[in-house]
Length: 156
Image (cartoon, rainbow, N blue to C red):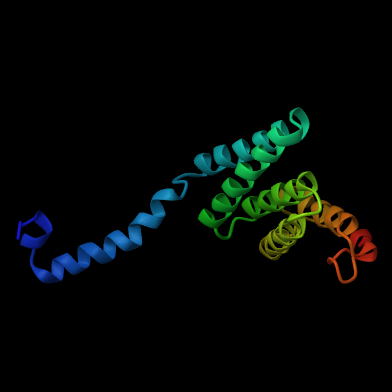
């Protein structure tokens, strides 16, 4: 058996090395500074505007599909940051509208859940964007058995 640097290390230190690697590796995807967080958030906002206002058809769907995945990862990498959750919700709800009736409800639920989570963290985040987005979502999503839409909640 070939000896590696790790196998030559005493057993307690090997275990410590493995535990540290497991704990530190997930942090590698987190923005290290506030400026990096802001840059990543701005990138999502710009990509949303580009896909929403300058694209249509299949190109728009593909752009929103990729953006929705990136927004999910961004929110997961920044727990406790309401701004990331709001933009996850905005992207998911817009993608639901672009995608059409097939598959849109799961995106609408994702948007609602992200926006509700953002509201719990900071109700006034992004100048009340969470309420504007939730109101639009409750207004546009069908109610009853099909969905969770509710015109009264949208007005509130």
